[in-house]
Length: 344
Ligand code: UFG
Image (cartoon, rainbow, N blue to C red; front, side, top):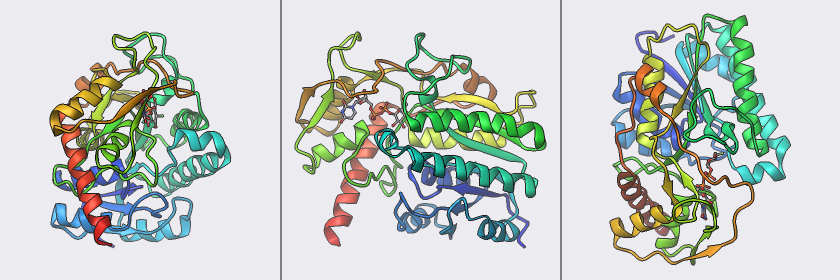
């Protein structure tokens, strides 16, 4: 058993947000222990994390529901905290395969909470999403805004939050934080880790970078007839490196409020439209992006962005990076991935 280090179990640590959080944890003196079954991530992210951090990365190819093997990991690395990223996250797929989402997202959470109780783990950070606000009537949304869902994926996030709320009274020694992410974008400045969608991207910025790289013929803007200044939808795009740091802030928080779990919006507080994203991409890269205006995408909401007062004040966390930073790093990462694939 090794005890001189502050181990943090990071489920889904090879994924998009997880991998950036691993870097942020190491920068702050924690020792992340990655649990990932690589169903939705790339094994060589581990090697790239080693290049970025110049450290040996501890990782295990284990699914979150495999408790016997997870116990083995926790015996070897007594963790002070768990950050639980591992989940399925594609809204469209969740409509087609809701049971897959229920099995993985609920099953993994239950397994992890049982282990938290068994091993007296002190801190728990859960990846939630602004999807729990559904289609909000009042914007910006704060943590008290009404919650709902409009996909099986969104349903899993809402119910997982409620499961944690109902679990805590039976295990009050753990301090739980629910982070409601807005739209994560961008990549690490090294250009070595970023968002690597398998096949056709669902999300806007990877679709933009793949189109600019010539992999996709053109981007379809899903609707320009919304009641917004330029007619396209508005989102709160948060740089993934800033988002990663919010997880470290949650672990380090000395917030002794009675709220357990405590909920935070993690966004920038600023809304950006789809057309603004496109024009910023064009300005930064000097590339013209081929796009057409298509019909609205089912399930899309017109507009959402965060009220971030609570996270700014209580976690002393604020987003620092800009949309421009996010686009520039996402573009570097796209080129890195293309080069790597062309060598294979
Ligand atoms: N968009 C396009 N064309 C595309 C892709 C996206 O116009 O090819 C538009 C969408 O219509 C939307 C905006 O770009 O207006 C952002 O779309 P994303 O798919 O990138 O993100 P969403 O806001 O739809 O979804 C994100 C997360 C989900 C989460 C949801 C909560 O990806 O996990 O926010 O609102 F559930």
